[in-house]
Amino acid sequence: MNISSIVVQTLPKNLENVIESLKKSGICDYHMHDEIGRVIVTIEGKNVEEELKKLKVIEAIPNVISADMQMSYSEEELSSHLEVLENSDAVPKVLNDKDIKVEDIVYHGDLKRKDLIGFAKEFDNTGK
Figure 1 (cartoon, helix red, strand yellow):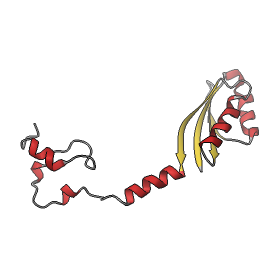
Figure 2: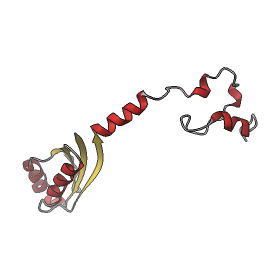
Figure 3: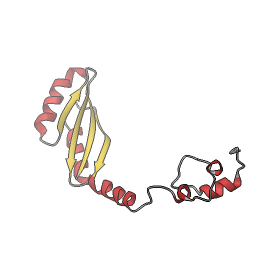
């Protein structure tokens, strides 16, 4: 199951009609709008193809200037990321090594992808 948010743009004079058409379409859920013609809706689909079909229907509604997908959530994608996290070490091995002095560890922004022991050997204790 995929869920995506869509920002629909229309002219302020057409706002009420577009909102009503979106609500009656049966393919999206209306959430909010502003006075300059932006409308926030969400769509759901079994896959990306189904969501794209729904997006095309929204784009075809009279007086819709644009409809752009902003955020997307996919259960399959989330499941694959959770699997990677569950199968990885929660704490990098270098941080559990009792033979390394704390002052020799240089942090470069990503503990999972850096060879901190190698970096510590390359730099002196000041990190320069």
